[in-house]
Image (cartoon, rainbow, N blue to C red; front, side, top):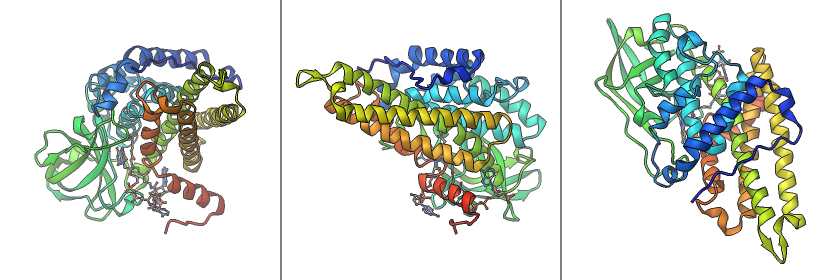
Length: 392
Ligand code: TGC
Ligand code: FAD
């Protein structure tokens, strides 16, 4: 049985760069995770079940839309607070962080940034409190890295539009009351629509058989002549920059989150290496184990500094999408490397559910692909530094 013994590691005294409020927020999410998520997460992941009861609790803990203004039910907090929350959630499980990222950055953010005042007032408080769960439909069966080529579309039909098409790989879909759906209008422009469960012709079949992100529900969104009232169209954005703007917020949260997975794997490996005796001494005493641990904490410390700086730039509205891509790619890569090395240090025990390592490693195989794959983010950095587009 998995027991959460996590202790945070702060090799470069980064806490001195945080405010008292940051530290309080981090501690409250950490305590919540230890008390309510850690004891159940392994079972839910093993059974590939979504812990639906946590949706309300995540809302009550302020994990949904922490940067959205208080008047709409959000937390009115800064970007570093948001990042720290995502780090604490993913320290436990990427699937739980996914639920919060999707709700906050991919559902609440577009309603807040691109929605009408009526839409903000109708949806945001319910989403913030966890009364409603949302999902975000951009990816299609034939268009993942290239969402601009999507074929899901809607046609004008008087006071409503008719939506047709399908989205695939959608986190939260099977349980969501609301979906933010990106589709093309008759002029071929991408727009966002708020589609509600219960609209005729709208179904959300669940995706089964995943070896990764097993405690997160994934599904399809299928639209068969769905009548969507025109008042459900997000009025203030057109084009791919709409969904990509949401991804900038979510990718930033993921960059913090993956660092949380890395910290958990490192912490577990350090403790295990000190406890486990082979050839008459703790395996932490062997140079090869020390090399692994030293390299892990070096990469984690570099990423902690990177994330703090990116959060500061984001607070000042100066973080560029390319800087966020670099951070997402860096955090996920280092987390996967740390997870693999931590697995080695745990020997055979590392493959069991008694430790979180293998669960993190499998989860990170989704995180390295969603919200832009590892190579897509590399190409975004390449384009930014050379000025030459290598995508097309
Ligand atoms: P391109 O021509 O480069 O750009 C189109 C317009 O968008 C603007 N833009 C951005 N705006 C805001 N934030 C960003 N990050 C932006 N990146 C680009 C750009 O300036 C342009 O604006 P305008 O005004 O000129 O129209 O578009 P492209 O078709 O060449 O594609 C570029 C590419 C490949 C980088 C992009 O499409 C991409 O990022 N592909 C990856 C797709 C992706 O990330 N999908 C994620 C789906 S959601 C998900 O995975 C959720 S998982 C959630 C969870 O469970 O946690
Ligand atoms: P593809 O785009 O087909 O890519 C396959 C491979 O080709 C990748 O290695 C890629 O890097 C490479 N490739 C593609 N183009 C290029 C290029 N120009 N140059 C070099 N290499 C290239 N989507 C949503 O909209 N909402 C969600 O909530 C959501 N949740 C998800 C949850 C999970 C668990 C997973 C696995 C995915 C989720 N996704 C979601 C979808 C995710 O964003 C896509 O899987 C991702 O964008 C990649 O698309 P694809 O799987 O179609 O791969």
